[in-house]
Length: 514
Ligand code: MSP
Image (cartoon, rainbow, N blue to C red; front, side, top):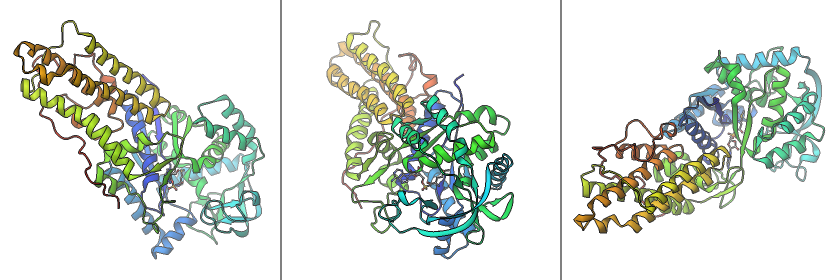
């Protein structure tokens, strides 16, 4: 059996409502999880919310409610949004969960007992937006490079984690494991960071300044710095779900993250694990950012892209398809509803949807849905169609393994394009007028039903809902799964009946850009 996978998304801050950025990370994780499940690989997929820290405490204060009330509401919104979007997570973790608190404290205790935590005074330039201290050289004209606001000088006594003590060990690990951080560009960035001295990490906040956090187990006057708390979620979730198999599953953990949070994941987290005596996760998979046409996505510009609005406007599968097809994983991409509409109409409505409706309609019209035998000796055109789908099957696998989702879809759509061409060149709608060619019409349609079956299997991780509907229209049992893939011809035995067509992907007629 294939080795298991444990896929995680970052846990989302509850100071904003679910938007395009969160949705992309989550859709990628969901697609990967579905892909692995469809190969019968034991798969766990966890997402959740990051609920402690300054940022959240201030968001609650701004909303005039107590933090717990605030985090319950926004965390609920994330969970409901993913559920309503058909995201198939196995568990939704919250950093305010009691089991998570216990794990954070246990891990901090281990690091403390190792002698890797010390108490010291620190004076630094702090950005409240980023919740981190900045070195002078990291500032942009004296301002936080992300928020463009001047940082505040803060002097306080805090606990520090000797991150630097693990620097060489981490460097060696990354050098020895080329797939620890992918794509390669991010791996190189991290290696460059690790070739310079790294500072120790401040892992506490005095309660006098912030009390919305997990208490340090060895000093009750302090709470845990939000990153040292949040990163541990990956371990707490797996412990909760698979306490007894933790040791065998944890080394298969894949963290999907955006490029803005590489440093905590690639440096803080592995060094914390090393100190705590926990093996490292399998790797990080880093994606780029969606850029809005008119500048940064913000409430004030009114250009926040909300997943459920997109679902209502275009359907969740169309939105997923666009996200996965448009962005090369690892690179930035520009979000545009116009481009989304063009893609959906060309690839989904005209390409895939049209193929399905033509084939199912002809099946119905000429044979009342009853599948006819394949050619005893398939002509070259049938062989070429089959070859196109074998190639798509190989390429989809290859590209998904390399996280090149856009290429995987491109490869599948090549085959779908081939099938549409085959309809044109074999012209069953012309042959059907000649009773002597009826058997050939049946053969052609059977070939096309196979093309649709394989398309549905290959498309299922990307557009699960529609692939499932097509599967049902084909009269097949269960759902589309790659591991159950049958040889060409075996899925439709004599007497098998398909259903009349339904519109799988409606054409979007008028741009409804808000
Ligand atoms: N809470 C931390 C993660 C802790 S994980 C132990 C956090 N949360 S977040 O809500 O700010 O962001 C989560 C994810 O959304 C990140 O992976 C980030 O890259 C992604 N995105 C936020 N805006 C984005 C875009 N505009 N485009 C693509 N993804 C971006 O960071």
